[in-house]
Length: 465
Ligand code: PA5
Image (cartoon, rainbow, N blue to C red; front, side):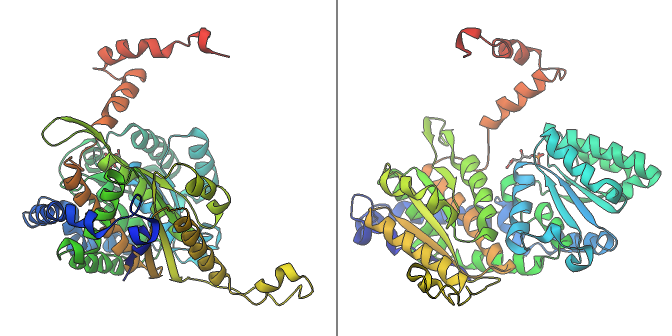
């Protein structure tokens, strides 16, 4: 299973101003224990829906049942969703299938190409639909929306449903799978009226915690990912997170992140995978961390304005872009490296250019060795500049380890919520932008917001250069 290595975040390595000492841990030990107890009690009381997902065989089996039904003959899977209804799907696909997956022939892939439209960029939508072209006949559409009324997903759905209806006639509904609330909502009602197959976004699981529900499981299974192993890995991590904070990876990760941001002046949390396959897990993490932990009020309603800023970087690529800042800029960051011991593929540099002294060290070297050496070198260089880092080590990139990583971060987010004394499961600040969009698009019932937003609709030329 994945493991956490945190020595390079300690005072021993980066000094007591920036690193975590035994004293720092002891000082918040009671609070950590209370956080672990609180989250465990909430989970045991059934209040944290996401903690039940690794063991939910019904959701898994439904995703597999529909995969069995739709995969044969399906050349393309088009997923419509945004935020928590898309980022997990994208991350799973990037981690567990080759980057070239969509470029392979239908026969080589064995499953459909995957397109996740998680934006209303008209060029993105049009380009994708144009590419699908005649293959729309063998395309399956998975529309994912818990609320069913998210403007981005709803507008895309209206476009694609109409296109399918025109191309396929009465058959169009047999190409659509809706993932939404079990009992209510606009998408639920449309699915019932049109007769789509449906899967459930569990009522008690927030969007960004839903990747291990049918939200993420169906597209993964359709693309050949072993979702049983994914859930097994999450379950194994859930078991590992049951111990006291110091013996549990989520407890320790929460402790490090919390101390870094509060006592060590490090509100910037960089996730830097040394693996392209894991890069988009950092995107998923960004949403989880940002929407869950960035809050204006604590649980008692007092203003607190807390929240670490999640940042993503890619090793080694961003060594040539970001590391200058990370080492010499403000010492306000905690960096979490993701490291892979055994990469899914490997190759050797050929034994050439023996006469060029500056290149001989590369001859016959494995590229995986170079990549991991660069990670270690960056870790070392960061430590020299007193910059704390943590490493999450993947023995290999497989479904079980990715499942474990997902659960680790979800559970850590719950613990961080307790430590920060905020509600990590809501996202009140997202609402105003949604309401303003409705107003700007002329939705009925939003005239008051339309009035308030009016000054913003006019460009003040005094400020235009
Ligand atoms: O994490 C969240 O709750 C959000 O990112 C939602 O997933 C996102 O807004 C999409 O919502 P919905 O699934 O209702 O369309």
